[in-house]
Length: 274
Image (tube, rainbow, N blue to C red; front, side, top):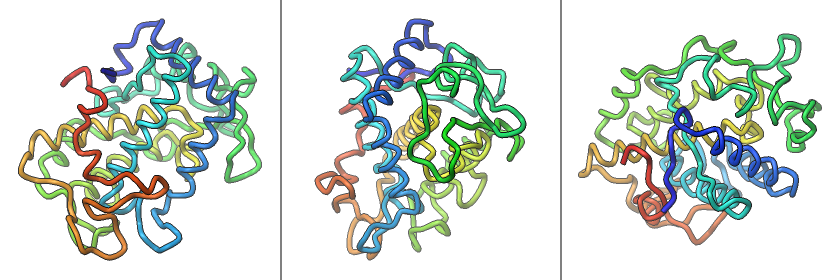
């Protein structure tokens, strides 16, 4: 069983193996297919008008499946690799070991945001940005430049205490756990972290930055924590709701995966705190 660990507790060898597997996926071209898929669903609209990946109830199961596919791809390169998670509520500094040259590299330089150190810097030659929203072909970050602080433990706790998973109108105006976690209302957790990192993370092609996976692994962990805290509160809506994915409806782009298939993370992996 795969165990997802806090990135702050990874050994030097675990960091090295994770970075090497990510770089190999990039070299083979497989990595960019994940960026393309995410960008296609960033607004949560499919060709039939149904919202899936963002601003809708299926935000959490959609990304859980997305992360599972990426983790499987990593393990096809190195079976020992698992997705780590970044607990940004406690590991809140741009000086964190997360941003060290031996792991993800640091913030970008002032004039253009270009990451200058680590395996994902342009100078390392491993990380051309091929799926992009502008002409810049290098990884960019601006840690803490666009929003001053990452979410706090108290803010996380306030969202975990929200009892109802989601509610009408089932979008960015909804007043439930999913939307408060996603960040369109309330204290803003998920969205704020994307903006805090900046660069590609603040765009639809956010998986261009490998920290995307660690961020969403923590979002996924928070969903699992919420599920344990509120065992009587399940995924909503359960059926008959237009324009969103109900509990037993399939999610694009997979067409054979339903939110109900993804409610129990322990069928696929555990967290180091489980």
